[in-house]
Length: 130
Length: 130
DNA sequence: TCGACTTGCAACCGGATGATTGCAGCAATG
DNA sequence: CATTGCTGCAATCATCCGGTTGCAAGTCGA
Image (cartoon, rainbow over all chains, first blue to last red):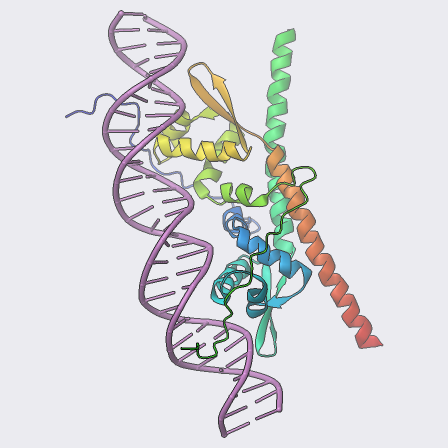
């Protein structure tokens, strides 16, 4: 019954890598998850024009008010949107801060990758000449 | 059988908003979706250090090789990663271009939102003084 | 040529998720 | 004070997605 010498390994211990957490290092995963839905982008585009409540948004979107409310909760949970009580309604406003922070983070990472590639390319050229 | 005058509306026609598509306007949704998974970030972090194949990655991650292969396909589909044939293996390399483009896009949008808020604040202050 | 290693495809499973409906509660407005 | 309208919670449903297993196929080295 010994498995027929397959290549696949059983899985080592999980990685447990965690950032040093000096200044609340911004986890891009939940932010990107919030931005990974077309409906939420639709909502954000509208809130980018003007503040609006769930009911107001529901008048212009093809989905139910409750679905929109859920989306707004998710967006607010990651700070992309802020609830602003207005009379008996709750209007929401789009905030650029988190988006900017995420942008800078991604920019840094991408720059790091490309820097490594340039380094590799330089080494390769050096070898080619030498 | 008329519904009891509930607030919820039935849903208007869907929006069909589409970008002018001048220079392939970069759809953030699939990119963010690719970045919305912790395992894929783990993979990207490793590829940011050094190129690696699915099998090599499987030696350091607690999931199966096939799962990793799927992740690599998704990352390659949005241009975050590039397959580099190396002998009988296929190594992957992390590319910063898409990440940078996405970063600039998000930065622009967030700046737009905050600009609108500043404008609103200015108007409010003007009214308060006048 | 044979064997070791790697990739790829297909089927399958459980949990997360986007969306729906129904109903209850609460705050302004008349 | 009662009506109107906005919000929130709960249950339900279909689908998507991350992960697994099993097997077939291709390629490099001894």
